[in-house]
Image 1 (cartoon, rainbow, N blue to C red):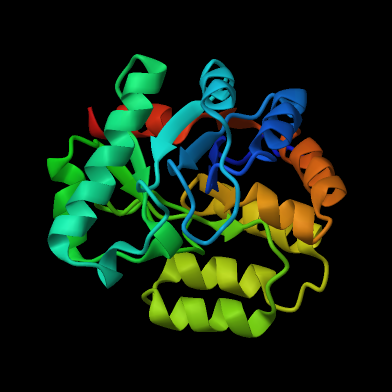
Image 2: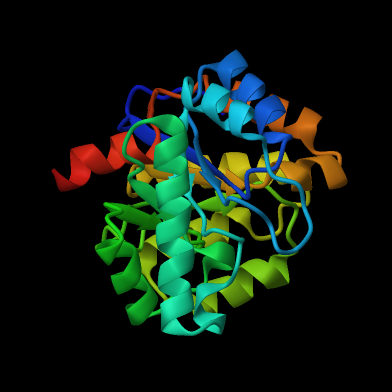
Length: 248
């Protein structure tokens, strides 16, 4: 990726889910390249993966934005409304008590939500929520349905095609889809997505999980991609900083 003065500057944000202890390594990598990030953290993980200690969450908060991700990392559309509300509220209360300030953002576990869940997130006092709808080069129309562009993971072309068809057709999404289909290398695919966003929409949102970076040995690739991303004429923000510009 090479900077191009004829293109509009990108607005770049990254976000990372599940609060795994490897988020601290990820934070160091983002710091290395001067790139912002938002970390969505549950209090515990019912799937068995570890979650950072309270002390580590406080350390991370000094450098990046912290958001909620339910009390126990549960899919909110799979539980009764009263349990969903308790999961959302308990998580926010725990994080705010720990950090000593308001927590504004929330990410739906595995991206699953509906109108009722969205309303519960708003009722709990969050000011925005992030989905996993991808292939987007603009922020969408609803503050509780913030989309993404690409996940840092080596999906097959068929996955992107399915996501495109299920996530809503559109010119911006089709441009990114055409840019990434057929690219065998993850970094090349992501670089092409950035290029597409720079000329259409002006917004690039990378998301992922640090435990996936561990399991699939993706740390070197992320390091390389972040280095390339930093060469772009872009403004790097957290999701909360980006939302403050958009909605306030």
